[in-house]
Amino acid sequence: MPRADEQFAGAPIVSGVPWVTVTLLGSDKVISAQDAGDGTLHRFRLTFSPPAGAAGTDHDGWITFAAAVRDDRLRIRCRASVLSRISVSPPDVFFGLVPPGAIKKCTVRLRFHDAELQRSAADLTVTTDLGSEFKANLRRDANSGEVMLSVEIVRSTNDRPGVHSGSLKINAPNGVSVQLPVRAWFE
Image 1: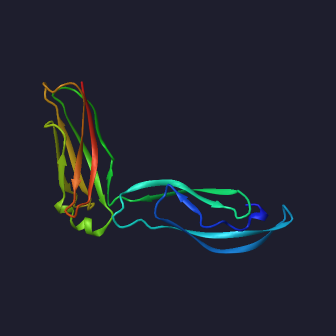
Image 2: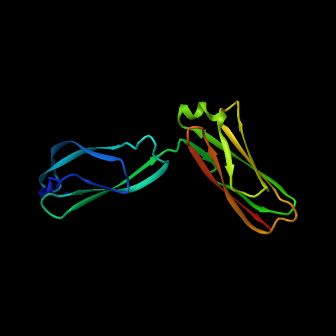
């Protein structure tokens, strides 16, 4: 900010990223050889504190500082992410083109980001809104400690052609769940 606008007007405005607080840590006078004048260096701490039940998602927004003297604004991009308590890889199931009579399989890895869910992984269930041609089951990999979701599509010769889609929902006993889109193209 220009030398004349060393003071900020009120608290900075945070937009697009919830649960962020901005704290002024201190200000130091600095001498700049370029403009032969003094300035002020302000130090801030940004704290991102989502609540315990916050949904896993990415946030992208701005922090705007307003000058006390003029209408000058300083906008700083701010990004933050809340990790899902269960992450999946890949994030969706796409079988591609499925010819009549074909069987295709896909494996999805589930990772748990808190110890409580890791302990209850044996009690996971799967619900689906897909047709009978799709089958899904969960199994625990003893070597990696991950849970694997196996999704299989068994296409019969009389299934209608076109895009078949729906979703799978993995439910933990404590109400935490993750949903995966599933798509396949029947020729």
